[in-house]
Image 1: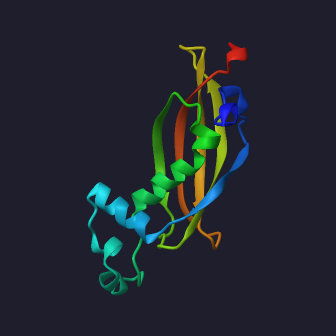
Image 2: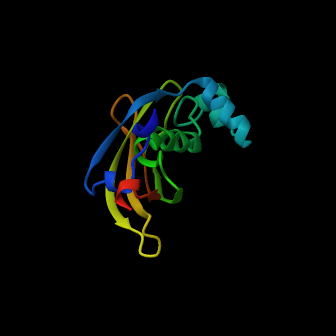
Image 3: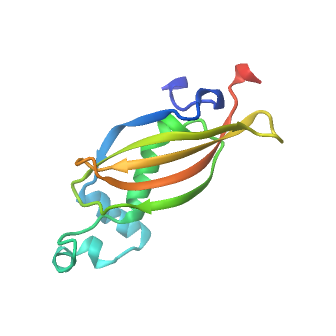
Length: 154
């Protein structure tokens, strides 16, 4: 993978739109394991009979799994060279995600700025949106990522 994994600060441009690949289909195993790992045992996520009696009519994938998956889908293009993800904000679950849905993500670069106190790095502010296989928006969030300046730019 080498240098193709992630970008240095000067590789980002405000206004740029990045479509992340590949997409990921969420399986029953993904949802069940995530529920077990995070101790989220709500029957809406695990019990088909219970879920059939809700407004959704079937099990809903845990929202934090969807969020974690979408962050993961962006790593190669956004935070692959990051020093740190500084924060996440405005996390919006726009629609439920169901087992079997295929999730894709795209990210808009909102702002790029060099650090005033440490010239070897800067902050990239991005907004990521995730869509299901029907092209329905399911999740959005904004984050600030601390990215190093490329060696040749120091």
